[in-house]
Image 1 (cartoon, rainbow, N blue to C red):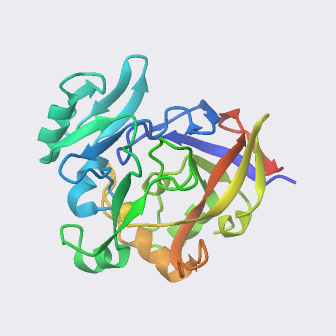
Image 2 (image 1 turned 60 degrees about the vertical axis):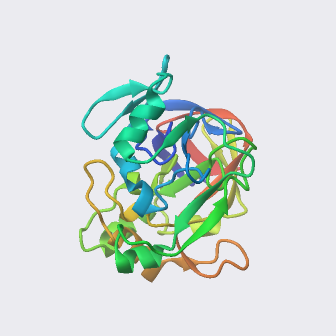
Length: 276
């Protein structure tokens, strides 16, 4: 039985910045090699900067981060690039973002980030000061990483196709949902809801354990580089795929699923995904 095939493979070298699509990559306990290896720390609050709080950090999605042999190359919205290893990187980023930040490769102990209440962002807009929750990073990820919850995020093409069908724009870009693996499937949309608790094999050796459906925040609604704002990227899910990822969380708009790595392996575009 085949679940599908890997259609897209992505990593995001700096948390909440635009990432890069890869032809192949090593995937281990810390996810795709180089994924979320860096993040910005808000000097004023000590929290990790995340576009989950659009009022403060939506500008991060105008930056692109790509891994190189010399470090991560960060390119700002005006096209100016610099390396993460540049001693002036903190100052450059602080100036561009209008807020003091520090580029880090390790989070502080018990690191947290702010997650704006998505429904309030939809109602009041990205510039409004809305309610938020404070979340501890990486409850299902290795210590010392910047993942929101787990080190891998899976998303099916069937889910993207269904979101596109239900959206007034008639499209749904994978980049808005920031997956690591986009899996082409012929099955029903939102099948990731039922992957939770299952184990999958990808290619020759990668063995995954799927944990929970992925609850969506305001990030998919934001402009991503040249992609415009799209509130329906979240509204469609709020209307058509509300599930309870974990007991006690209530029904939340979801798309995709979080996973952990049971056994590492190399992944290539076109690899078969099948039950373990």
